[in-house]
Length: 275
View 1 (cartoon, rainbow, N blue to C red):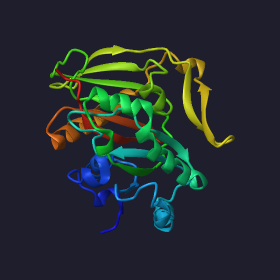
View 2 (spheres, rainbow, N blue to C red):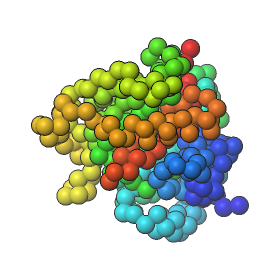
View 3 (tube, helix red, strand yellow):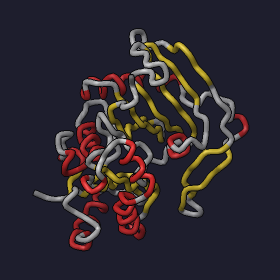
């Protein structure tokens, strides 16, 4: 068995080998109607200590992605589970090119010993030494709009509502709380908009082709107070949410991105904060 697999060869039952994120993405990639950016995953048998043995295979698979830039993301064995999400705790590196690939993979391995991971483990009564890390190398989506969706309203635990957050640019600014995204509340039954809060957004994080790095950029004046998620994407996103929730058979937290008129799902996990 190869220790490096593309998503469609990975099952959600293979958490011990491909971590929570990697195994979940593998399952999502098989769902009809869901667009997941192509990726390959280094399983937990590959470590910082033996990474050099796999460099040739990693570069071959990188070439098969047919892209210049990727996202390098950790996928821990306790991550995105029902009891512990580790959301935003492990390092993710966006717009990584071939020259920076291995240094970012090593940084993902190193994130397991970071203070924020150790503190999170303590809060969840987890033993850090029992956690193993796989690495997801995923084709980069240069999102014009991105966000998060919850199949149950996590604010009031209302199971009849879906909550969506949206902002311009890469999703990192939403996940890390740098911007206040738009918020949309939908009825699960009718899919109608029950509530819509449009928030001002002055800056966005986007990839700069000039500097070949992620850069904070000003949002055009006429767009700052505008609705971030176009209405014609409402049905597409909601259909994706219902499809994924049906597969998981439990409420889910989804990360999504829109680029060139296409909506992608970049991550999904069970909601761990519901009461």
